Image (cartoon, rainbow over all chains, first blue to last red; front, side, top):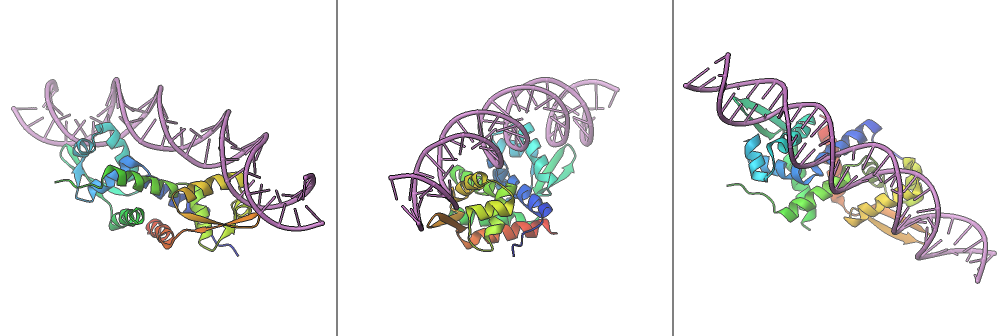
Amino acid sequence: MIRLPDDDTLNKLSEFYKVFGDYTRVKLLCLLRQGEMCVQDIADSLGMTQSAISHQLRVLKSISLVNGRREGKTVFYSLADDHISGILDMGLEHINE
Amino acid sequence: MIRLPDDDTLNKLSEFYKVFGDYTRVKLLCLLRQGEMCVQDIADSLGMTQSAISHQLRVLKSISLVNGRREGKTVFYSLADDHISGILDMGLEHINE
DNA sequence: TGAACATATGAACAGTTATTCATATGTTCA
DNA sequence: TGAACATATGAATAACTGTTCATATGTTCA
């Protein structure tokens, strides 16, 4: 008998991984592994516009992969939890074999 | 000092996760966790055409997530290694919290 | 309050992608 | 060999997605 996660779970699962399936976002997540950063610094580090990064941060925030912390004019973003580093490591491990 | 994986690694990493970022493919991978299956049976299980599944299996095979084993007219597909189940579990764990 | 700065957002465009349809390839068996 | 079956593949299309540009929102400080 075939047993699969229900549709809602599969949807969330694929949406979750979809976020990791983009060069910019995965680079951004790797960057945030080293600690929180503000939007403009992220943009500079990745050689992208502030707008592009802000859009991507919104995606990451929408599924709770990052948190934003406002300090005056600046917003500092950081990884939301430890799973995320683990997921990145698992992927990195897979492609290095 | 900022330390990131090199471009090639980041590219492979995002391409790797991109494959999990699709409802059909992630469902297909979950299905194959239960053992090898032939193309038409997969298509029937997922309510999709043989062609659509065949195209997706090609994607999964191209980055070595599945293996095909021919037996007469039929080709049986299975997960390529144990990482893959682990990656699925890690995602499932993340969305159930 | 107003100027300067940091971030967020909406619309539009270009590039990508999953599915479908038609058909080709590969295999078995009579 | 030819018919029947299983899978693979190419082209076309519709839907989705990431970036850009322009601009809005939010914050500080003089």
